[in-house]
Amino acid sequence: MAKNNKTFFLNVSTIICNKLFLIIGIALAILGVTLYVTFPWILQSLIRIATTFKPGWKAYNEWKCNPEPYYFDIYLFNWTNTEDFYNPDVKPKFEEIGPYRFLLNIEKMNETWSEGDTFNYSIAKKFVFVKHEDSRDLTDLITSINPVPLSLAYQFRNSNYFTKLAISLTLRSTKSEMFVTKTADEFLFRGFEEPTLDAANKIPFVKIMDKFGYFYKKNYTEYMYGPVTMHKTQDENFARLSTYRNKKNPGFFDGKCGTTDGRIGEFVETNRNSSKILKVFVPEICTYTYLKYKEQRVYKGVVSDYYEAPKTLFDNGTVYPENECFCNGQCVPSGLLNVSSCNENAPIFLSLPHFFHADPSYRNAVEGMKPDPDKHNVFTAYQKDSGVVTAIGLRIQVNVLIQPISGFGMYSNVPKYFIPVLHINETVLMTDSVASQMYIIQVSPNISTLISCLLTVIGVTLFTYGFMKKKPNKNDNKLYDLYDKQEFQKYIYNDNFIKVIFL
Image 1 (cartoon, helix red, strand yellow):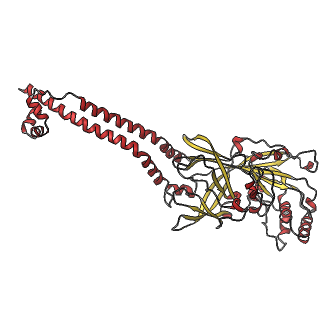
Image 2: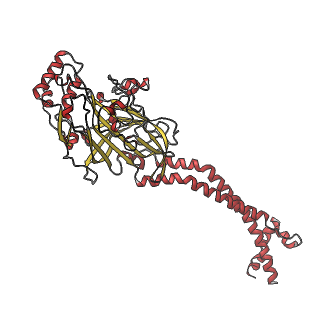
Image 3: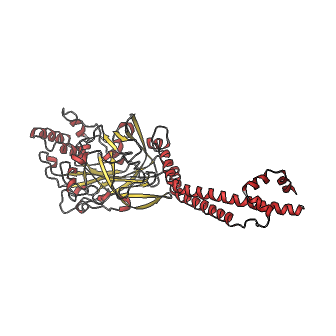
């Protein structure tokens, strides 16, 4: 009797298992399909939460002040044959000296948040020199063009006769020299005294600094870029500039060339169409640059859309006539950007280092230029799903224009050259913590797809097994009756069923 009861119980258990296989199989299959269909939406929702741009949130905190300082390298050009400057048969020779390595912290300050889609802030950069095995010492002596009297003459080149005469007499009385030899520190942040500065400051209509240095009084709160007005709403306009210095066109360039077009650089919109040109506003050059998509590259394991500067980055009408507004009053061959209007009217022209991507005439006029696409191009890379920057490389060269200037004896008969004085390399990779987050975002769709497939396959397998498994024999009247739902429930709740289990 016990044996028959156990056999009967095994048959009942088979019925229960078959039904469980059917139910669990259907549930797993539905869960797998649902996960596959809804995961893109779930991922975008999680990305939107993770990149929420509000005070106190992670994305905002890392934007406000970079989590860890990064290297900012400066290279100076040493002019080695200034004695041959007036010899038309000898080209100026330059030797690149550097890098002079600094740690750079960028901090956003003076924030003003409003109820609308934008907010205002200013940018402060703090430079700290670091002694590194690859770094040069700031006591290096560098010979270069003396930009102080040249800038003064350039600033008043179009003035009337009497103004020019006053400036020319001032330059003559100070006995300023065409070239100067100073330490790297003096050329950069510490600045150096120049007799022209003291004399010029005594002229009523002239207002200039007490010292000259290319980064003099531009360290941290001594000089701040802005104010900048940026879109904060997380849509297609996120991180796009609205105004700079409270104007849509600050007046550094004419027409569209002077507009605050582009994004600030830390973010782009999510899932960006790579065929679109990426415009990035750079406060240091008072206008925007544009980059084009080239390929996908991997940074710290994260696949990123890589954009780089095209050959026409600093075109001013030579290639595209509509870019003539970048001439800023003095059109030159493509490859140099006239930024005198945002540098107190000094004859400053920017290019890529070693005149990379510039008209060959610039390199042919001097010696020592060795452009390298891996070292001297501008680029940026973003993780496409999140729009977070994974790498950025800002490489800019500062050049000083020297040319004949009538009315100033010191510059009446000089040859025309664009003199390279320095270039910077600001290359930044995302932090390890950001890389980990971006990697999770990158691989999560594949993991989700794998889990969805596994759930679906397991569910279909269980359903098929439960459906195809042999049913009780119809000749076993008692067992067949139990297979009927109503009879089965009666038997389950009967005390005899409990007895069967323990027999």
